[in-house]
Amino acid sequence: MDSEGNRRFVGVMDCNNFFVSCERVFDPSLEGRPVVVLSNNDGCAVSRSQEAKVIGIKMGMPAFKIEEEFIRKGVDVAMCSSNYTLYGDMSRRAMEILKSVVGNPAGCSGKAVDVYSIDEAFVDFGNMKAGEVGTLGKEIVRCVSKGTGIPVSVGVSHSKTLAKAATRFAKKYAGYKGFCMIDTEERRKKALSLLPLEDVWGVGYRSLRKFSAMGMKTAADFVAKGSCWIKQRMGVCGMRTYQELLGYDVIHLDHREMKQTITTSRSFGELVTDLGQLRTAVSNFASSCAQKLRAQHSSAIYATVFLMTSFFREDMPQYYPRAMVEFPEAEDSSMGIVEGCLSALDKIYRPGIAYKKAGVTVSGIVPNGHIQQNLYYQPDYERNRKVDLLMDEVNRRYGRSTLHLAVQGESAVFNRRAASGIAERKEQWEMRREHLSRNYTTSLSDVITVNADA
Image 1 (spheres, helix red, strand yellow):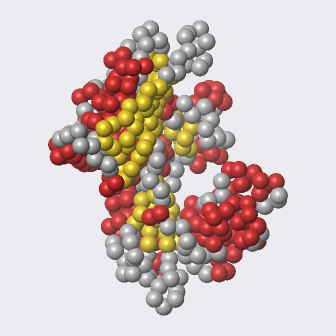
Image 2 (cartoon, helix red, strand yellow):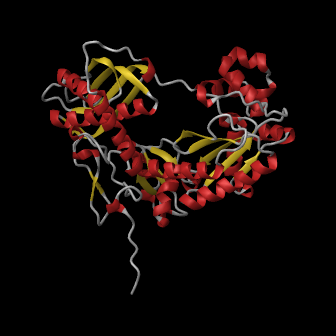
Image 3 (cartoon, one colour):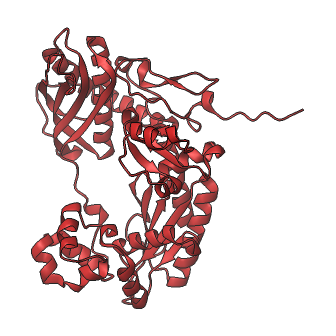
């Protein structure tokens, strides 16, 4: 509440079908067609256009089933491999536009814009009145959509959970034109009666199954059970959701816990037996973990490297080793973590074994301000810090792995056939991405060329 006792407004900006929308920005032929973005190794659907949802393509449907049930039967479905370099840069552009439009509202207690995920951000409107919030919310939709080509929805209410509910209505009903505001008690009650329980932020899969069996279908049914009933079954988190649905902003993003473990792993595009290939893969995974540590201003005491053979190849030897390394001091440097992980890999590698997957997990994570120093360990802190900061800044600005350690190999960046735009895997361990689009916004060789007739 503000100084006058009025409830403040909070908003959510959500990019619609984000991965699909990013692909459509640079390929107009995808407009109006069912489009599916696939997971790593072109495994299954992780993002679908509205047209794909209408014809029955489900989230998580395997790519081979999409081919069998739709494409081979003549349905014009477009499948795209995940291009996280493109998606990450488009997200950065959308969030920068959002921050420039919102500015720094009077009465804002912290950050006016808090980026929650690659396609979603919360907005604190400070002491703005309802009319001002409505005007600014519509301006956000206009500016971000125009500046990126990505359709966005903005929901506003007195709590984050209600604001997320408002974004769902903004997406579902074209009449809202991308902006929905739940600002009165009457609108709140109507919204809860129309909001399916599975769409309530904070109600997980297990709770949903249990509540559905009791006949609860909407958010209104959930709230009607009362605080005591909800607390007995969902604890403190359930109580927060209950209060948020009543219009009280009690979920604070600043209180999000620091991750206690971070894992980067990947199934290979094909089986790998060569140690050099594995060293390149593990180096990339370890460097990714280090970057994630720095992003949350933390360091790790331990790193674990693991390898896996294919479960489905019963004709081959099965081997699932792992090895842990302890750093002299909690580490967040890419060079230090990569070096430790490579030493762990050397301990568990067996020649002649065909590996299908590898990964790195860092644990024993502590805040950077609480690192126990080691009297006998004297690394070049200043040099490591400069190198890491430079890599993070260059990669943030120009795309993932633009600047990387030499041990990560040439495979850190995909090679492309410039004429066709089809990605080639330079290494066996890299993902299979047969439908990969270009990095239109981060690679000069991939920038769209326009040929005008003389």
